[in-house]
Length: 244
Image (cartoon, rainbow, N blue to C red; front, side, top):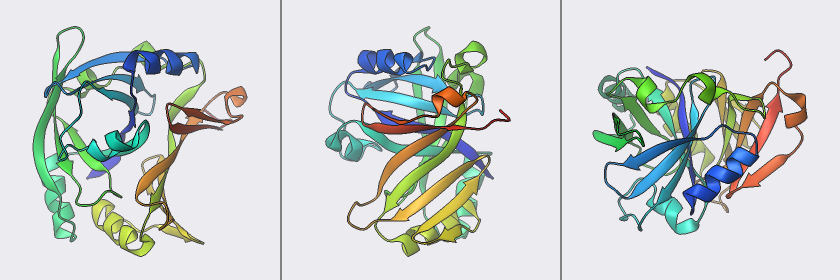
């Protein structure tokens, strides 16, 4: 079963600069390390709901077949996001039975700054409007920081929603039905799928194309829920929940 949003990928040009800027916004940012292919390195903003934001920068241009190559060509900002499977091979097979072909699972990994190797598997979607799957091989707490790393002075606690522009709303809805095994809530020209405590909101915007538009984060601090921050091309909004 696909359980939740695993992480949201934010492509940046300069990782050190992004770490500084996200820290200034009130996030606790933890260096992640270098990916196994040597193409990129990252830093993580771990959230109390178990998800995280990945700030990723390429050390050299990725090949066209790379999962994030399209985002690299368009600059900084939200690139895509990953969902967390229970058993990735089994979950991919279930998705295929529902009519959606995904590639994989394929191995992935990185070496943390402390030398610890982290391994996972990913499954790639057939179209750009869909997220990929990321399932842990090594223990998850090696990949996703815990403890004080999940405490943020801006009060951020988790992903509230991800907004996605899609070229063909009906076609994207059908693909998400197959991926998640659930039905959306339809309002005007949007379709909202719920996964765990978060929402994935599809907007039919043919003129925009298939791209993530915005990310909303839960926060326990009313003072944080004031405005949208456009930081390294990513539109982040804090959503205050009084009972957090």
